[in-house]
Image (cartoon, rainbow, N blue to C red; front, side):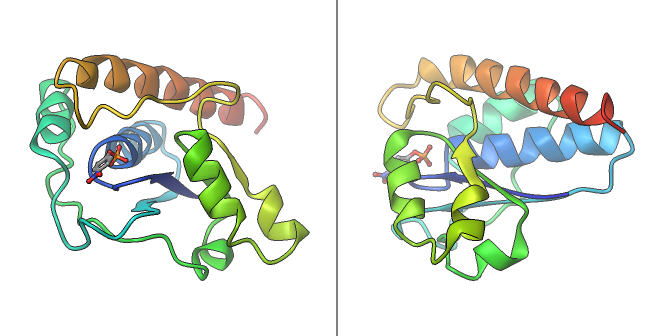
Length: 147
Ligand code: 4NP
């Protein structure tokens, strides 16, 4: 499976979701391709935010090698699922979808709620990590129970 995680900046939430899903896929012997991107272009070429790197590192996951990039229309062809962190990301990515098949690939990462943007609040990074880890575990369990 090829999964793209998307948030606004691609420096806080989606790099964590990318790193956590990659880690769990590897642990479970799943040959998945995981990537992340931002709808915005401010941080292109940057490393993830140091607070995301730190919270991942505290849990044994290294995301420091990731490089920020912007979502592009070609991602609809490269990925099977495009998982977005909030409704603003959902609207932005949906606005770029060109047909029903592309629309169907897009969904909220947490299904019915958002992953809050922690950029302006240092204290949110732990919560964001926990939300992301819980959903990634569920996602892998849902998948492995059907194969
Ligand atoms: P992210 O957080 O979407 O989780 O990467 C943000 C990072 C940067 C900005 C906004 C949100 N920014 O405005 O630069």
